Each structure stands twice: as C-alpha cells, then as structure tokens.
Length: 67
Image 1 (cartoon, rainbow, N blue to C red):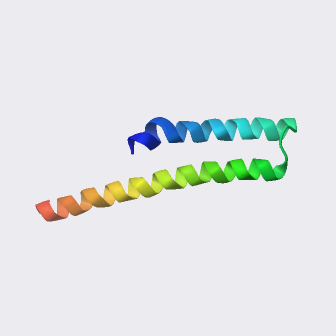
Image 2 (tube, helix red, strand yellow; image 1 turned 90 degrees about the vertical axis):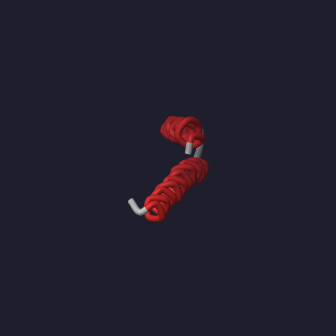
Image 3 (cartoon, rainbow, N blue to C red; image 1 turned 180 degrees about the vertical axis):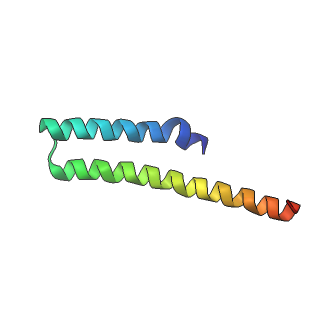
C-alpha cells in the first residue's frame, strides 16, 4: 500500500500529464497515447486491488476477533 500511495500513483499522474501534453502537442500518436493510458489504468487498478485485499484482511481479522 505504501508503494502505491507514495510512489506509483504519483508516477501514474505524471505519466498521464506528460502523455496528454505530448498528444496535444503532436509529439506522440494515438497509439502511443493509448499505451500510456493503459499503463496509468493498470497502476490505478493494481492499487485498488491491493486496497481491496487490505480491507478484506481487516474485515477477516475483526471477524476472528469477534468485533
């Protein structure tokens, strides 16, 4: 979780900003732009998967503890 919150999500935002600027400026074509978007969505999706696992672990621990 720390990796995603401190590093990966910030990198994803930077990738997105740079891809948008490059596409609007004509430095990259649509395929390259869509590949960057795919990378960003993959990072964000992986973060959400890890968050789900974390939350499920907490729920299981609370269940076992009888909370």
